[in-house]
Image (cartoon, rainbow, N blue to C red; front, side):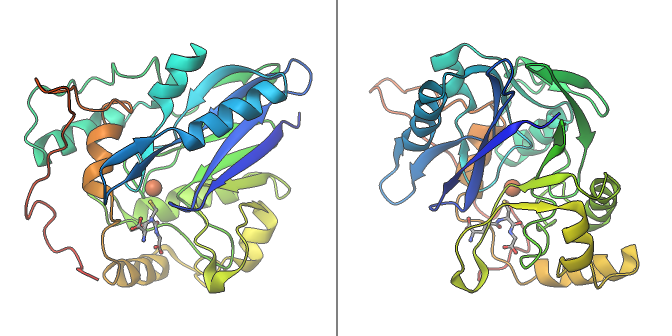
Amino acid sequence: MKPEVTALFDPRTFSVQYVVADPATRKCAIIDPVLDFDEKSGSTATLNADRILDFVEENGLSVQWILDTHPHADHFSAALYLKSKTGAPTAIGERVVEVQKLWKGIYNWPELQDDGSQWDKLFAEGETFFVGEIPARVLYSPGHTLASITYVIGDAAFIHDTLFMPDSGTARADFPGGSAKRLWQSIQQILSLPDDTRLFTGHDYQPGGREPKWESTVAEQKALNTHISKCRTEAEYVAIREARDRTLPMPKLILHALQININGGRLPDPEANGRRYLKFPLDGLKGSNWG
Ligand SMILES: N[C@@H](CCC(=O)N[C@@H](CS)C(=O)NCC(=O)O)C(=O)O
Ligand SMILES: [Fe+2]
């Protein structure tokens, strides 16, 4: 069962958004859509999400699912916006409730509902569903975040921030709730899928300025991934990953994005003057590299 996979690359955040369609029924899932945000002006826009909607319409697709792989730290999720336009249900991994509890503390936000009720469906490890007639299943893939999941849809796996393209290595594991050890274990589970499984990553940072790419296979990742092919043991990987993470500054939108994304992609309610405001902790992420 081979879904038609279309990637929409967002050069502002180096994110890859996907439309995954069943050619037989024309039903599709949208994965990891981006709501545009400019931190310099505070402006939001729906350029990426509208591009997805245009693609869906031009190709006669009907949206069955709006899926996020994890609460993103570098962009806002457009899940709620797309739900308002399509009526399709939103979903994320069930451990999102733990991410909600963690960041509820960091933001000092007692009113935040931390039961995952912002999504229509919370997926557990091993849970199955369909995109049209194509069977799909969920792998719990923590490490980058503690709620991350992989969607395996037919012969394609949407692996988000675990493995990037082979020349780019792997995702960082130093956000609150992250773990290099768990990330290694999640990557091993992904690499145990059949060798010809198509892997679609969540970001491409275009190393060396090459054109953006997002698709690989299990066999290619095993042979060529710069962080994985060299590591024989979990301990070796954890040492490399943690050393690199100590050099990385936080994503520029982490404090903006998490307060939207742990609330299901919902912007803060407007205040009495009709404007929405964000709130940041000062010195809330201890030990961060300033870059
Ligand atoms: N410069 C980017 C960095 C974004 C970032 O940290 N991306 C995460 C995924 S959300 C990652 O794994 N990066 C790996 C790396 O930079 O090596 C930003 O500020 O948004
Ligand atoms: Fe991420």
